[in-house]
Length: 249
Image (cartoon, rainbow, N blue to C red; front, side):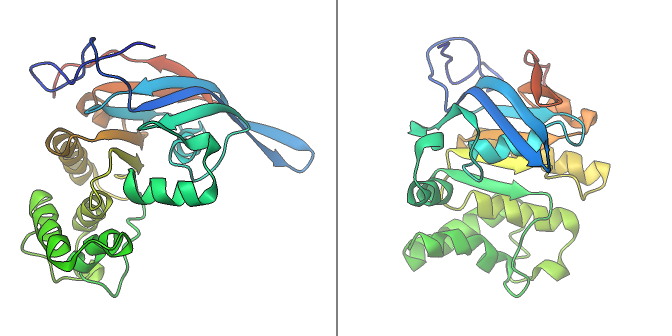
């Protein structure tokens, strides 16, 4: 297993001594549609390292969401193995998966998934309420995270009072609430215009650096590829390429 250190002068991973945070080994997923079988993932293997932002690229139906679901413990593969932060995701019972998703992995979805009746601050605080974080600590982290994503003046606004880009920023802050080691983002810019989408990707890249997390971001937008440390290309469920580090944007 290849190891890498924290990063180079730009903060990007380079060859060295850091162990991978995520290891995917020979993952295969098949869905049945009547008498037919659809192979969503075909023996996919790769590693992701601490402080790395990896873009997973592919057309609709290429297997991006399916792959993220296996890594995040939202679904189980038919074959293969997934390890996240030392946890063998593919062997965890449901209680273990719930703890993993609460304490180790943060999720950001295309649809934002905010609770409409709650303010921005209250939405960000939900994961910490579930983990029973003390109120004073929770309130302080909510303030810090909303400031970090540039929404310190919108703490009391509800989702319908915010733009799409602002709602996604709240969703990102919420995903970081419990200090996850891994951030999984499935088409986080899919409902946003190109300029706002690029701002969200730039924010994710900055947060990977400042919060020290690893991020896996599924996207079909080639304009966003240069903001990633690496690009994984999925084609019909097969990992076609693992691109080298691009030049910084």
